[in-house]
Image 1: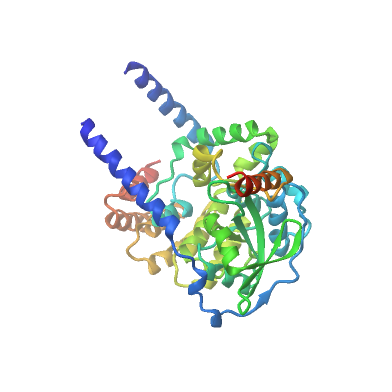
Image 2 (image 1 turned 90 degrees about the vertical axis):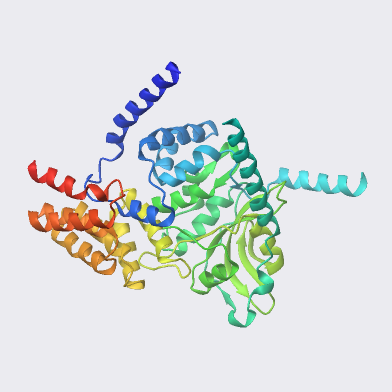
Length: 119
Length: 315
């Protein structure tokens, strides 16, 4: 219990520290068009507090999958918050369009042969 | 307590089951298509980039970007922006992101064949995600739809190493359906895709604005207001950008337009209040803030409009 309280507080505090870093451009007075659109689309409020943590997570995952670390920074920067949130949870499962490679063709042919002759 | 939780868990499982089976049994769209309403079209000028192994993402993206006027971009330029070595492929999200980096706005089209055909008919080749395998053994692939032959019931694509691949409606829809009917278009700057709703269009423009690509966002909002002159969000966007550029008089003009078009939405009044405030029109600012708060008394931000403005005046 105590531990989770501590963890929660740390996360909250660090997220405040990060928020300042995240929104340097927009002035904090008017509401952004992106927020208005998001609200009208789904009632979804931008989860600004966790955003930076999620961006770091996606970047690390990309690097783990072999993307150059410098490229990964620019790639995550070009994503919207909603896109980042989607990738944090599912980067390993989402379809990665590739095209038919030799290996998959071989596997497919093997599968068909197996289905036709060995069943 | 645990009982209630369990109940919810079972309920959500059942719901998921219903939803999943609904997906699996959704009928094919192509038999319902009114062939008479389609005209034969083939965007023959669309460039072709025969892909190297695994590189269909960068190749397909380069194809649509070049059509959108990014003439000097090549698949090799895009590989470090979208390719994931560990997955031997590219994610849809990253194709959208890389489009923004090329100073163009990507739009995901509605998940319908008619929408796909309408965009091609409007002159925009559509980058589609296909699954050429099975739902259990997927072979994910990106290709670009460049034409429709309604009488023959064929779709024409730039695909992989095939410059002009012809697929029947049935075969194409099978592969596209397994790709959840995902497709994106990249119109040249200042043009709007044909099939998106105003709200979805502006969501895509706002995404570009969020990333600080303001010039591109202004062009997007402007094109939107020409297409949908009575839709408020475009003016909200233009006002927001004017405000961020410090042109508060211009911002006031746009936000005022928003309140005229949407007199019952708080967002316009809230931003209008700030545009007044920044010009030293304190009374007008308070009046607009009061309306915003009255329109959305429950909203965490708009309900505080008066308080925020007053606080700002005291500083």
